[in-house]
Length: 429
Image 1 (cartoon, helix red, strand yellow):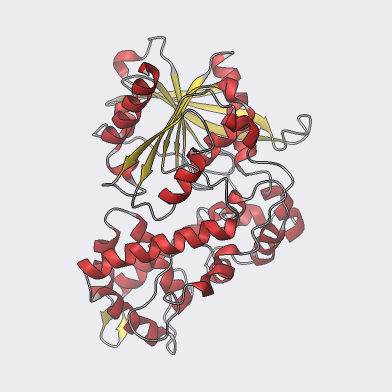
Image 2 (cartoon, one colour; image 1 turned 90 degrees about the vertical axis):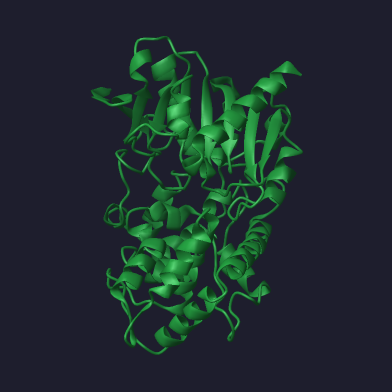
């Protein structure tokens, strides 16, 4: 259903809503609505343009909302494509799964069964239904950021006929190792990034250690009402995955105190860094399961592997920080996720039946793929990305030693130009 068209400086935006099965294996069963926003340059509104589907990172994050044209990936993309910004199922203006909506689904078992239908396999089937409705038999280009790249590999596995080409940024999934090795790799990447922080701002983790000692005995509350614990404080290390992460933590730590209590600005900033799961619960509940192919189970992998890295929880010295990891305590304590701990436990214990990838199909892949691999990526590491690329033909790597996982958002024009050049080069050879 075409909803409305809006014209704003730099964009013509058309809203679309699509009805798709909740479970694509039961097409006559319950249906849900998936929303997508079409964007085109005003000067090309009536041109017959190829389409580009943008798949956002996550899981559980809505697609970006265009504001003003600038030096962004979208501005660059609109020179060549009509772009579709998909709110993946359960996010944004698609039938949204806020925590209260999840709780209303019934028992934890019913909630877990429902959420099991919100991984990459279902997202790709939604995308294929949308493509057929908008384009008929014509394929489109996919741009996948982070988890969106994981979805693109699922697309390559099960519906390559729908793809003209794939562009990936920080989004090659780890196909050749189990989930525990994924977290071992990312813990090592966190440690390297902590080294960058310590060189640039050697006092920051010492200040955060003082905060940790304080909250070990004193009740300090985030604006949401959640009590700040040491484990939750350590999760601010997630911001190190961004280009300006070390500087952001520096500013956070230097603003920690108001007298002998933590400052309101510090508590507000910490909540912004660790407490976003009220609006994106799927990220917390499906983050580890998004790695699990058929026959695999997450079993709180990041938490089980954590003790192998003694620097994380050392008792003295600078405070150890964690990265992109969800722990049992994250779900148990995060304001907004009340009552969903058993649901999370069930999802983590689940042995997944539906596959996310077909390795044989990927080995036969003939769809051109250009993938930007960030050498400093703390979330999707270079070592695991290279291992996957070695077994999937037609993947041309663009190794970026300068930018971080947020390179597409911050330097979108140059990143996208690099991917386009790589595809052009691959066709020439």
